[in-house]
Length: 79
Image 1 (spheres, rainbow, N blue to C red):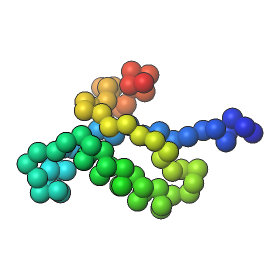
Image 2 (cartoon, rainbow, N blue to C red; image 1 turned 30 degrees about the vertical axis):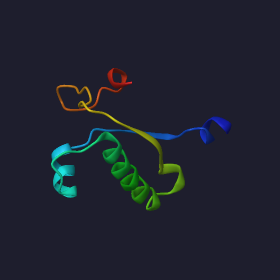
Image 3 (cartoon, helix red, strand yellow; image 1 turned 180 degrees about the vertical axis):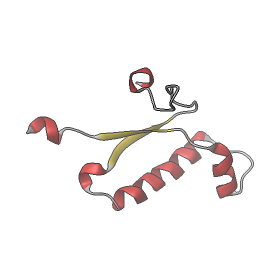
Image 4 (cartoon, rainbow, N blue to C red; image 1 turned 60 degrees about the vertical axis):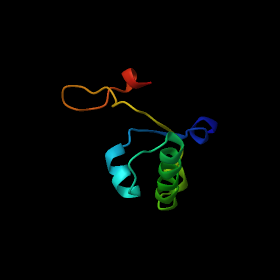
């Protein structure tokens, strides 16, 4: 149906900046550089996935997602 075709996978990414600094061998990072690096990694992952599982868009967040006491993500609190 049309509704099923309109479903798009959207990602919310909370990067580990310390690991990215180590990976790039840099002391400081700018947001655009981090976004480009993550976008490239998402593209690489998408190449390995079926089209319907590919991430169509994403956002980079600075803060952790709200979680329950059992460490599950509270979806309604993070939208």
